[in-house]
Every structure is written in structure tokens, then in C-alpha cells.
Image (cartoon, rainbow, N blue to C red; front, side):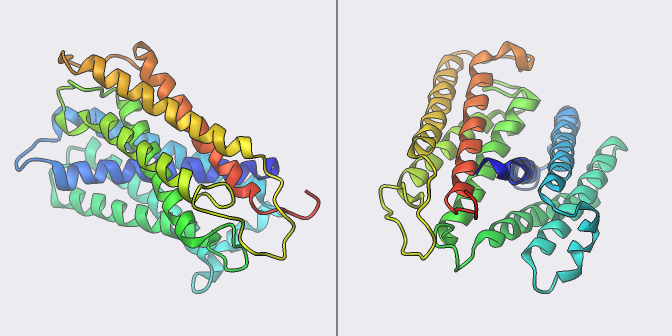
Length: 293
């Protein structure tokens, strides 16, 4: 289970980046009021784009640690017709290119042009395809523990939760921020975490309340049950801290977001939820015993 840390890092970082891109695209394309100017929030948009770029770059670099022959990685795009792994890498490369293009358009003052909207739309579509291809890699009929419905839903929930939280955290946008399009991200995060806790409590293979071990010729999993409950406790702890922080800031409107270090409650909430996601991903890979485990 612990041997899969490169895949854990790649999926968590990749999903966080894709989730942040989807959140940013939704804000700019669907929730911006007519005539709304990007200029007051220009630095926030650049921050999110560059955060996603860094996370995807780190994820791609760490994924090489899982390869037995890293120098043959260039061949991965040779099977686009049949391989979801090839499609995942293609989507990753497209995400990197589109993020760089969007960053250039914002920096050169062309964010108000139609071209920027087209690029952000393409980013959103590619982000969804990236998450779909990542999920499809693990939707194998030969591995009952990686149930298609659970796998896809779990990966998208992780992307939405960590994407919204990372965007809110890195841009410093608690309630009361003067940029209303970004100020509701912590509330969105809390809703996503609540859904995630419910889904994981009920649908986690083997350990979920609504699940029993699926029939399989494979040996039974030895992944510890405490990893499942620890993940739920971490997610619930992060949710409680966000709710407490939202309750404290609701009566007063802060004129602007303070630096990251000045929000210890939200910082701790982000750390707890991230740890919960990592624990859940180790559990995910641990559900399938490998030879020699």
C-alpha cells in the first residue's frame, strides 16, 4: 500500500489542480455578472492559474517514481485509441499548455477578449476529461474493490473539495472579501466535504456501511480499518473548523482577506482535509493486494 505513494501524490495533486481550474472556469464563465471586469481580481486569477501549473508539474514529475523504466515514458502517447493512461497524459499535457496560454492572456491584458473565454472553456472541458480518464484507468471489472461508480465519484469529489479549498486558501478569500465571485469558496468547500463524508461513509468498498466485501478470487485485503475511520475523522474535523470560521466571520464583513498565516483555523482545516484525502487514497490502493504484500 505504501509503495503506491507516487500514484497517491499524482492523483491528489492532479485532482486538486483540475478542481481549481474547474472552480476558476465556473466563476469566470458562468457566475460573473454581465460587464464584470477581471482587473480587480487579476492577481487572484493569476495566482490560481500558476498554482494549478505548479501542482500539475510536481504531479507529473513524481509520477516517474512509479515507472520501472522512466526513460520509456515518451511511448505512453502511442496508445491513445485503446489506453486511458495515454488519454490521461494527453489531457495533462493539454492542461499545462492551456494554463500557460491563459496566464499569458491575463498578463498581457487580453482577458476581456473572446479568446480568453474560449481558452477558459477549453480548460474546463480538458479538466473534466482529465478527471474522467484518471478515473477510467481504475474502473476495471477484474478489480471489484475499485467499483466504477465509487471510483469516479470519489475522484471527482476529491477534485471539487481540494480544488475549492486550495483556491480559497491560496488567494486568501474568506467571507467578506471584496471580490464576491471568490468569497463563497469556503462555503462551497464545506458542502463538498459534507457530501464526501456521506459518500465515503456509505460507499467505500469493504468498509462502507452500505457495502460488503465483493466476491473475488483475490486474497482478502489487509488494509487497516482505522485508515477508513481516520480519513472520515480528518474530513469531519476540517468541516467543523470551516463551519466555526464561517460562523465567526459572518457577523462582520472583513474589508479584505489577510495573509495565509493569519487564518490559523482555515489553515488547519485545509491540512486536515488534505490529510484525509491522502489517507483515503492510500486506502483506495490498499484495497487491492499486490503480490508480496
